[in-house]
Picture (cartoon, rainbow, N blue to C red):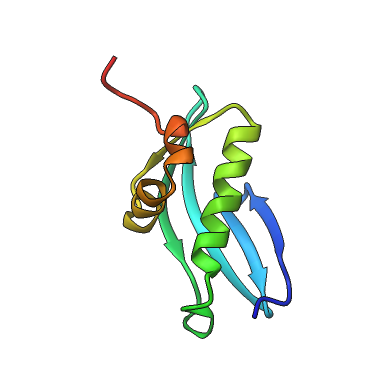
Length: 98
């Protein structure tokens, strides 16, 4: 069970971080000047796998992106799958076909 949920945007490291049970799960990103956030990688420590940490992290990341009026390009396979399984986030996905 997750005992801590300290979520932050570590802009210096260009990653969102979620502190859980003394471990840091993170999602690396690249932000453009036009407000597009490319999520390039997610990592959950092996001790936290299977506890829903990655899903919690991605949900918090998407909430932050939405709050800031940005859009997302999910390059990480986990984030792509998460958005596919949670279509309410589909409106945040940057559409390159205009």
